[in-house]
Amino acid sequence: MDYKELKSYMELSPFEVQFALTNIAGNFLDRTLLNAGRGNPNWIATTPRQAFFTLGNFAVLESKCDCEYIHTGFHPEKTGIYNNFKQFAKANPDAPGMKFLESSVEYGINQLGFEPDSWVYELSTGSIGDFYPEPDRILPHVEQVVHKFLIEFLCNNKEKKCKYDLFATEGGTGGIIYVFNSLMENKLIKKGDKIAIASPIFSPYLEIPRLNDYDLVEVEIMADPDDDWQYPDSELEKLKDPSIKAFFVVNPGNPQARAISNAKIKLIADIVKNDNPELIIISDDVYATFVENFHSIMAEIPSNTICVYSFSKHMGCTGWRLGVVAIYENNRIDEMIRNLPESERADLINRYESISLDPENMKFIDRLVADSRSVALNHTAGLSLPQQTQMALFSLFFMIEDNVNYIEGTKKALNKRIHVLYNALDLPLDYDRTATNYYAVIDLLKIAENRYNHSFAKWMEQNYNSVSFVFALADKESVVILPGSGFDAPGWTVRVSLANLRYEAYEEIGKKMLETLDAAYKDYELNQ
Image (cartoon, rainbow, N blue to C red; front, side, top):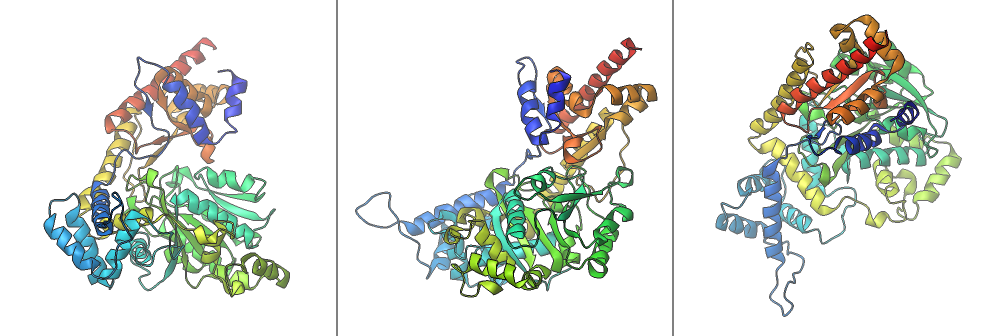
């Protein structure tokens, strides 16, 4: 691949680059493809899945009817369904996931105060998915379950009395795009407005604002790689500018895999309180559960924060597409909509009047749901009921199952993998309690300088880039990693996903990265 073609790839999303790299790396019959590009984990949580399928079996039995049409059932009856479930559980004690499923039902009744028939009915009808989602935003029992999960694992139980409204979405990415769209539709962000981007960051946050649909001006808030990827005070103080309308952040980060420290979160809170009270913060917390005692921005600044969470990473369920948007019930965003100029409020009344008797006072979370289906199709909005039911079981698994083995097991696996990789690269690695270890960001120039000399590192910088390195690695070694530049990381960094391969593979990846550098060094020597 020539330089001109390589340069064109620098303009692509890193995930589009990943597809090209995978095609190149997988084109050899005599090599094993090692794909550490995307962050799809190679583990799954089995118990809540078993519970879901056993629940579905119970629900179908409740739906069966004695009629002339075989293969036919009707909607389950609500009255007495809890007792029917108890009899089913007693008759099938060894059914997969049954113990956890029983515990989930009893937890809802005893800990969350659910009426037994209503709770089992929602779970059962949700698992068979024979109705439209109603309410469309999220099922009522599912909302309470997921809410408790968010308070416990994202807010570290700090805001037990806080009430967040939730919207179940098609993964975190669905939540992200819905939030962008509704902020624009509701005049809270307009074309040409400034938004702050906490960088490095998951690439869509860099790419979406530049689209013609939004045409926003990006202000980078750059993390310091020499300070465990924390944001310097001088960078965060950019948020004091009231012309900055929103702040987009992934916490813990992707690709840098670090949680924002409590001190930095408090500084952001002070800036919002004292300098920019209408700053809207969108915090993507998908990696939160990999950090012990994680503290979300939404726990510190609930009134201004829109939190997006996805179950995809820790539960190993990217294919389920399970996400949720959380917004504090008494939030500044609703207040900002009420304070819009009269002409803009009139436009919004016109937009939502077909679905509300009081469109002027619709909450932003409900506008978000309506906008997800272009308002006119609001009656078909909402995440599918089987997805919501599995989401509830995943939440309950974290809260009530003896899951220390699972949670700590995934953390230990990531920790082992990153240590194997760093050892292979001959890099030091200190323990960091804010790190998820889900990704590793490797500075190739630093390795080149330490392994060889400063002159070679300068030669690499002048003649190549991280994109050329990852293509050479894919072509020569069948290893796929991504250039850090696509995430707005320093230009000569690469991102290695630690989630999707067994630990032995990371030793091989480290060795092959060094072999590729060795080949570049030989080229350097020939040109001296």
